[in-house]
Structure formats: C-alpha cells, structure tokens
Image (spheres, rainbow, N blue to C red):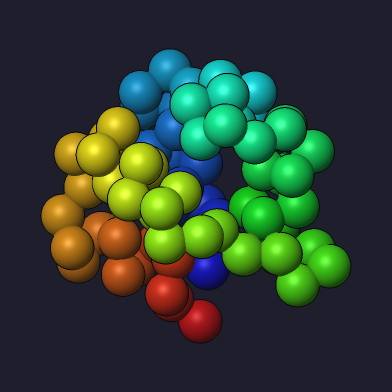
Length: 69
C-alpha cells in the first residue's frame, strides 16, 4: 500500500484519520491499523470503493494507492 499517496489525497480533501474513518464506518484505531498495515489489517473492497468515490479516484490511482508494493 502507498500510505503517502493516501495521506496526500486525505490532505488535499481536508480529511483526517478520524473523518475518513467515520466516513468508512470504522474506528480511527482500525483505520490507522489498515493505513499502516499493522496486524495484517487491510482495507476491504467496500472501504476502497468508498474512498474511491469520496476522492473521485481513477482506477489507476486506486491501484497505485492500495495495490502498490
């Protein structure tokens, strides 16, 4: 996952971990674990879809953020 790219999108749209977590319907702690890939936590497909919609991301941007290694 490209954490920096996600953080850039969040900043561009005025989101914090807490505001994006609320939009996704998860706790800020869960969001942080997923963003930092701790404890093998990953964003679900539905969470990725919500982020894609919120930030109007292209398929390429989604791939770059969530599927980059």
